[in-house]
Image (cartoon, rainbow, N blue to C red):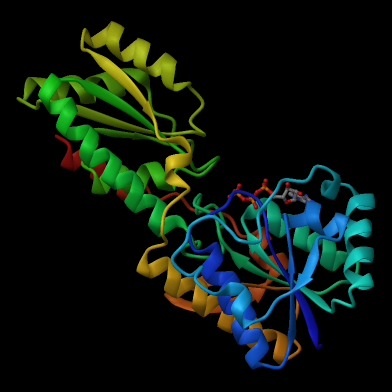
Length: 320
Ligand code: ATP
């Protein structure tokens, strides 16, 4: 194994650049030639591939986004698309591809490995929706961004004695809502894993109001099956309170990666390059029992998420 490609795919996440930088520099240190594949799988299909050196990744450690760019490719979800991508990789004599991304990107990587091109995957998404790893790169920064937003919104909610419904990202995973709901002192976290009854939501708001609270915060995951607007209307109708929505949207994706995300990204890349040097392919790097390690990509994709019910219950108890 002497020449590897690296790509970032799916939603960008803070720490993607830190991972790319470490793959390039650890890779070169291990006497590998490292090629950047631009725009994820779309770029792989189109041959947007360029050799990288230590200086190609200068001054990116602290930046959000990804210098390799990212994209979503419908074509890559077809067998034909994957084959095209692999053919392109072979034209550039790539022996292996390091895929940095989330759930969907890992499925793309699995499709590549099933067609005979080795891969190594690094978990990087703000959604924290990869079950095999205790945390994904980008989650820590995103959760802190959400927390800061909740803190600010809390001030103005108190001043106006208002209820605010804050919509956060996370796709089908409620972790962004759950963690920020607990750390931000929300009355309720609305998550797709445990769909709350509207009676309960309104009871929580009124419980706070009746015990003298100035504000109430409802953190809602984007994957929750009721729209933010409908929740706002329903809570306002049933409680008679002023209720406002705040959709944090892409604000959560950007920003300089936290210390934790930089460290995990760097360590994951180190493990990835060591795997490549040891001839162990089709592995997913991640945090298991608090340690950065690796498991087979198939097992990583089969892992089932367990919902942290204790955290959910804590929000209920602490907001009384
Ligand atoms: P995030 O959750 O942060 O958005 P992600 O990696 O889950 O990141 P997706 O949009 O789900 O983002 O996937 C990224 C890309 O991976 C897709 O656009 C597609 O090109 C590829 N992909 C997803 N699923 C498959 C699949 N089953 N087979 C081949 N490629 C896939």
